[in-house]
Image: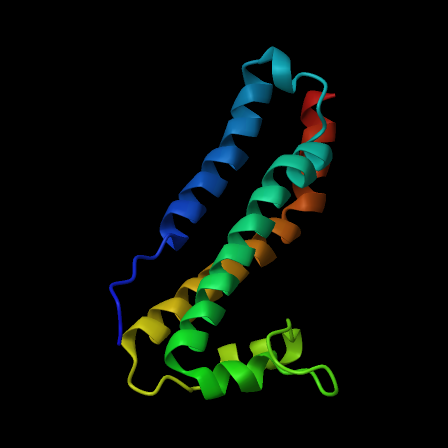
Amino acid sequence: MNTEYKSYARVCWRLWFILFIGFFLGKIFKIHILKGIPFFLYWFVITFSFVIVIASIAQGKLLNYLKKNHYEKWEEITTIPNLGSGLYNGPRLSKFLKSEYILNDPTLVKLKSEFDSIYLLTIIHVSFIIPFSLVDLLLFF
């Protein structure tokens, strides 16, 4: 029932890092495109969009895998009272991600690990906004 699974979390981290470093290198070397763009705007428009898309893809892969291979658990996670299953239920998904539920399924372990990695990327991304916006303002404007 398990199919081969390839994680893209490492690629996402590298691409995020390239976007981050690329902005400051562009500012240092005075690349025309980045000349008038503040870090705050760049961070939200370009990189935050990237992070949201990647997190949505990781979540979708996890839920699709659960639906195909662990239907009862998928139904439990996606059920909202009085509305049924198949919907997004953030609190239940978070609880599942923190649980030890794996049923000796190595693919599920990898999917949970990838989702954790993407979640960490999102937290780091948000935590960079204020300090690096200030650095950008102080050094480049």
